[in-house]
Length: 436
Image 1 (cartoon, rainbow, N blue to C red):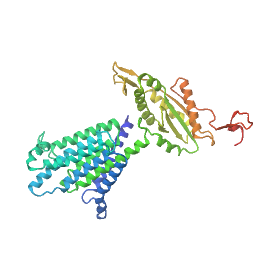
Image 2: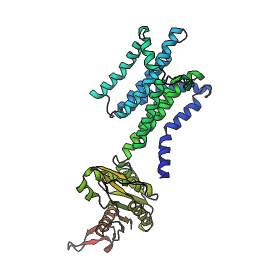
Image 3: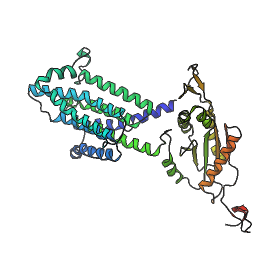
Image 4: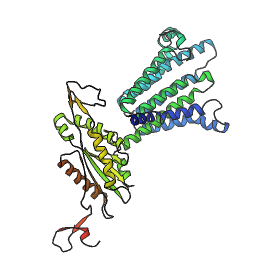
């Protein structure tokens, strides 16, 4: 439990929290030497360019629209003149409106289904974003001043509680709501994009305070864009290398790992004994939820091997440099840990885990016992291929299932290729019977 909590904290802090910390350290006034100030001034354009390119390449309308919103908010803060009383009032109104709309826009992009911008749905979202500056300019007209003030600068609580910030109370509510919902979505889905959105909102919040201390708001809007860009790449990497159902390493990660196995290794194949039965009785959705619950637990417990889901219902574990004897202890630990898991079916389709004895089950909760059958084999000689080792592990898995399940079986036969007998009799013989 503590290890999972620690992983969640690290997933939230990196890379978004680190990027924001570096921005606060280096982008403050006099934070950089003179020779670096010119390259830093080009950073917003670099982040915008690469963000738009990768957003288009990865078909991420969320990335493109988020950057567009950040650019519009930044330009509204920087380009509108101040000095005279009328100009100052317009500037404050614009700041109040953008501070209210930016977090809500980022939240909307998070909730709406991701996809290409060049679809009817994507173009509609683009149109809604482009309408907002026109709406803001209309609200800045003198005859709309009272309406804008009542909507975006009103006070719900005594002003003494918000004197510490120039952001009006409606915008504070928008920031708090967006942060809360992004936080909930991060906890539920462990999505890098949600973690990035949290830190992007914090950077935007800082941007609205920079003028008080002589900082430039563009630097922190750029920081927000950089956080979103970095987490987009992180999310893309995860989607590429991780299995979409279980979240554990998938086929591409497996293909890279087998290229680094070396000459000595063991392979284990793990199957959930009851999964087919539950799929037949309760449906595919229930069996997928069980697999989704069990696979990350196997990954967390298996510290000496590499766990993958490449296809189907089984999990594959690679043990580079280890024999089956060395792998058996880790595999039996996995088996025992999963045997202790308490899963229940609530209603027809919802699978949940009872993590504490104090948790109560309802009358509609049906226990779903889960055990593992595991087959493991090793490369016994130089002529054995990975395919033969995996076949041996699968045979051991079927033996484990045939023995009633909830057991680890070791492949015992020689996993060497076979050839036709040189005598021409047609008998299949082991390579060990004649010279190579």
